[in-house]
Image 1 (cartoon, rainbow, N blue to C red):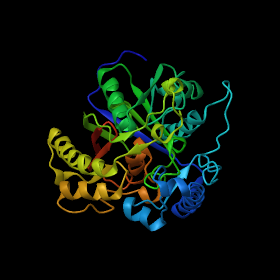
Image 2: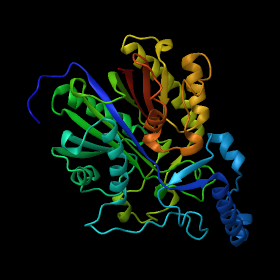
Image 3: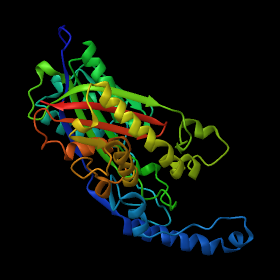
Image 4: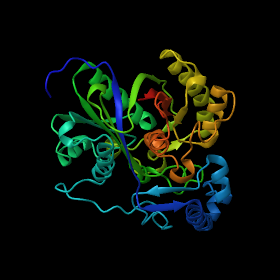
Length: 379
């Protein structure tokens, strides 16, 4: 990278969305769960009656939709998930000399973002892979992607659960603003399905797989069709155990099942709903005021996609009414919760219709608790 003066503006110049080929419907998940419940409850009937075992609860598709707004989700590998004796994806292990599964997802999304920004790998100085889970500790997935795309410079991974995408965009913005990079590629390969407990009625339907990417660069070098000045960023974290995943390398040293239910995704959903919604609404209002605007001047809100009821409550508190699909687009019905990628999916699918000067806000909220946002204005 050649030495340049500090940029007056930093922009998002390209966005990419890669969607897996495989779809899992609510009906399919419920059928598998209910078969498992019948099998488990019959096998353990005596223990359940004695109170030494807990019966597995059954479900139905309409319960899922009413509770979440989800009708289906995409998964990287569908094989194995609906197998009652397995109920987890059957992903073939790749050799050390092969592109990793998560690296492949990341590259697919990255290529789309680069094309949208009119950039190639040679134009990028840094790569950030930021998501809820990475499939290994090292070498970093970002460095693997950097190599695959022929990018000079550096790369690193970040983990901030459902705010991983927005927090990584913050880091990219700061690097470009400070002059340590001219263009940064931020990628969110959310391979969540291996961490889903498909035998749990309250969480088996929540997550789907996807990959998103964005190019953040100096405003004076951007030449894409859809370009957004970053007006400001805001982040907040508050420690909470209400959303948790305990699996990690230390699990090997515990005298417990390293793949047990407590090591997979689990949450206290009602507590999360009660605590996060007001935090998110207050955060969004603060973000807008920080950049000198009022809420009614925002054309679109690209909110985190965890639960439709959360988004409706947040938008009602923020806007004074339940946000319309045009104001606060929902992608949950098709994609489900995709961890940090949700708000970026909403942006990818619902930004090209904005006019020059329109303001929008990307916002995430999730485990940690963590909340991150960016205020944008279309050029």
